[in-house]
Amino acid sequence: MPKNSRQNLYRKIPSITKLLDQKSTHDILARYSRPFVVRSITEVLEEFRNQIEAGVLDAGRLEEQLQNLDALIQERIAAKLSPSLQEVINATGVVIYTNAGRSPIARGVFNEVAKTVTGYTNLEYDLELGKRGHRDLHFETRVKGLLGCEAATVCNNAAAALLLILNTLALGKKVLVSRGELIEIGGSFRLPAIMEKSGALLKEVGTTNKTKPSDYREGIDSDTALILKVHPSNYQIVGFTQQPSLVELVEIAKEAGLPLVYDVGSGYLFQTPHPFLATEPTVSDALSAGTDLICFSGDKLLGGPQAGLILGRQDLVTRIRRNPLMRALRVDKITYSALEWTLMEYEKGDYVRTLPIWQLMSQTLEEVRKRAEALIREIAVDDLEISLQEGFSVTGGGSAPEEQFPTCLLSLVSSRWTPNQIEETLRRHTPPILCRIQEDRVLLDLRTVFPEQDAVTAASINQLFG
Ligand SMILES: *Cc1c(COP(=O)(O)O)cnc(C)c1O
Image (cartoon, rainbow, N blue to C red; front, side, top):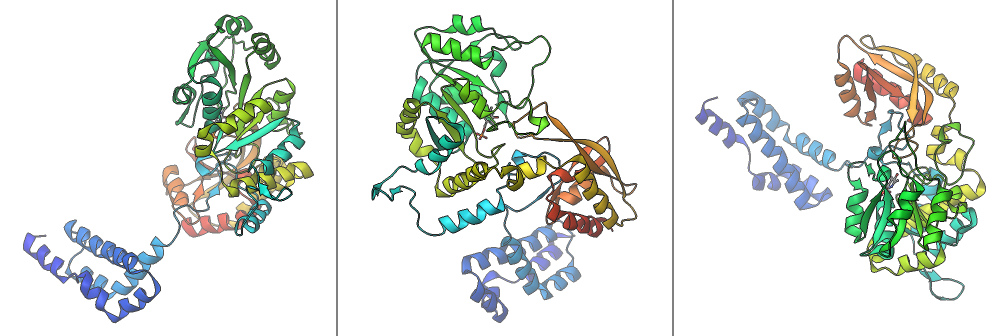
């Protein structure tokens, strides 16, 4: 388009002042804040200019759009008022999926939390003594009852827990870690980096594949503050390997008079009858082996809110609580309440039935298959060929790296759309549906889709590809 005819088009776009004076805009201004309306209108007008610039809006199309301006502004406002953080349907088969918010909060738990935190609470008020109390008490009593530890505290997440532990107990001193356990999780959690920020000095012992009890013994000197064991929760070293058992490590730490700290990562409290978690370390085993301090996430296998739990020896927990960093990393009443109600499900023995991750993990292959068969019957799309195939779900989220469990997958292929196009269409839908692509097929794993989402999943596929 020649430059001067573009100029003519730009001139047809009304000014924001003029639009704000119009009767129709007054109605909008009565319902929303003025700066918000101004921002929305500015964006719509800006888009016109961009489209003229790009040559995709000619005089006729612009005229149409201007006739329709009120509706366009209303649409823009509606879009801006829809939340960015939203519910998605997780059909990836990754149960604890960090990018999808890790463990969903149980609805029963959430309802109780909502009741509690929408009013005032006794967060730091001891109702029996009528004076200031400690916020940890609400959850510490339950953790002690469930696991038999001496003391417990909680902070923002497991990374914060480690930072606090190291900064409190090992500032300027050495911390022994096996070279086989220098983990990175999800890109931003790197053990050596956290160690550095904590002010503790990393002292690596052993080799990547083999660390012997003697490596720890020989690594200890008068500058050593503690021994740290880290669960390699997202990888496995196989073949010619060796790591001292936890019992051996406890012994080495005792001999040296040093605390043994264990980052178990996933927060698998105690063994459940689920065979696929057989190799995941449990918090209760780690405690009974004599570990001095244990830390783990609240939103992995515990099935609760994001949090970093620290349990173990009273004297060590007390020192951690007194660290000024604790004030910066502490959690709020929403987290305490969600943790408490989640732990109560464990006390009742109901958690496998009531906490979402456990509900999803404990579905049998047959149950998933039945749902997949029912869902296929609901789908009628000519250009999409849908079949069932067996495959595996994973726990994910830095837990049980070697554990896969059998599931039944919906497999989508099409001569009309590529797997990437299908994946993108599903992802950009409302609600977004997340899936995976494997060997040129789009795979949906219903294990991680809540049964009440089956109908909307089928309807979405019909609508998107029909
Ligand atoms: C997941 C994990 C962490 C990090 O936990 P966040 O709660 O995300 O901070 C640390 N250590 C181990 C072993 C983990 O598995």
